[in-house]
Length: 272
Image (tube, rainbow, N blue to C red; front, side, top):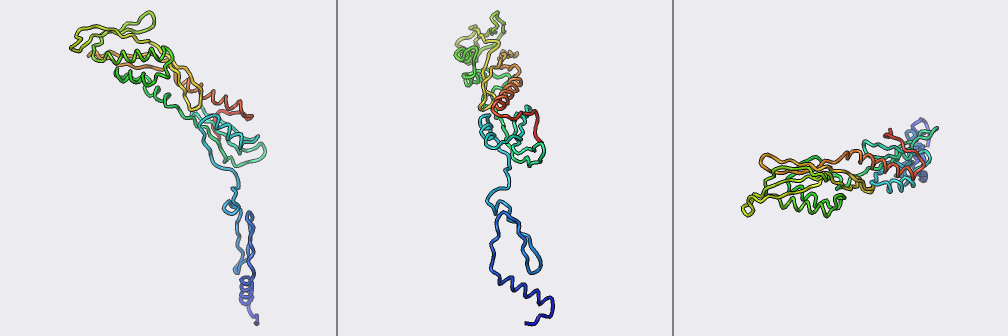
């Protein structure tokens, strides 16, 4: 074969490359391959080639302090940063946070997202709302385990008394020296027309609630509320004393419990 032009040279190179035995490229490295029309870069550093991610990343969300500590212990290091946000009720750990001298990805995170219990949500939902007698009585019966003082047995008796006095005309209420409130009523059914009765209810009662799944229980004071309308009907309810303060205290106790198990300080705020 007579070589007369650069094209002839290129054809010879191309034929030689095609005839060469294939060589396996090493995963985890960049390679530059010469082709017939130049060079081509081959990136074999991605996880699809190495089988291993280049770094830890992603956010894991847990629901209680015990789970937070377990994941934190497994993945944290001395430069991990931890933030507590009382407004969002979250604790966030940036497991690969920047060091004092070196920037890191800050892409591997752990978040404690506290979840309020059903009982807490149900008591807060009806807080300050007046209810018909039967609804209020049924609510007390459904939440007997949370009633501390008066006892659940006493409150059950009160609930049953409220249910038994539905077909009456409520006339007035009196605050007793014991702190209880006494209601006067007159039966309106035909069988007991004109029969008078009384219903005594505590003005204040104490409940015990667990604000978050996995947290401790706390006592709350509930003040009894009522209204006798013009038609002689009675609506009942309660007003919780400063439930927001209890929620903040419960969150602070969760943060404190985490802080006793880790070496890193817990900062007030949220990470960038």
